[in-house]
Image (cartoon, rainbow, N blue to C red; front, top):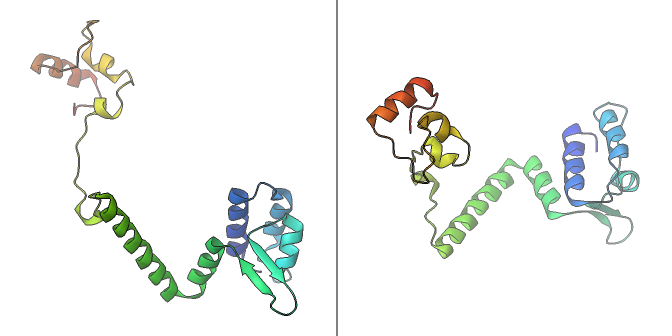
Length: 160
């Protein structure tokens, strides 16, 4: 393993999935990766960092084995065609999931919604800043034209 991007990907994956990962040793490996004189084998990587995502075994039926997340990443790096098939399959599975749940999440038909600042941030205090009425009544804020004019002159958010 000589590529810096490969080592960084493996390190991030291990940090997310492996509580016994050794981040101090990983930093040392990451600094040396990319130099022409440095390479690290899978066995050395596992021994130094306590990694669980890769496994190398010798002998008959031996080889290098990887967690599916890591295998997919290597496959996408090696073959752009594999990457396209993987993306296509992911989209197909998401469409199936949406169809089975009866969700209307077609990415080509996302409507553009218009929200007021008060709907997006209901407890932010912007209503009091804009209203400036001093009323303590617990009622929804429905500004009239005069309130809107006063509010727009002092407030940054003119779209209520």
